[in-house]
Length: 53
Figure: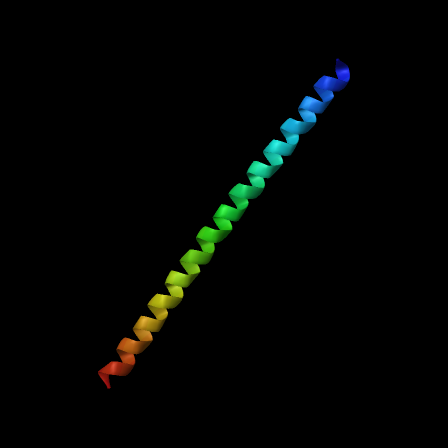
């Protein structure tokens, strides 16, 4: 019985760890997308400036 409980807690911890990892990955992806958009904006600005000449 005690072992069962211990195993259950172990599983619980594992689940929490996986959830936090997935949250972290999602955040990372969001940041990456944000960076991409930023680069796009920069590129467009650059193109605009060049086309004015």
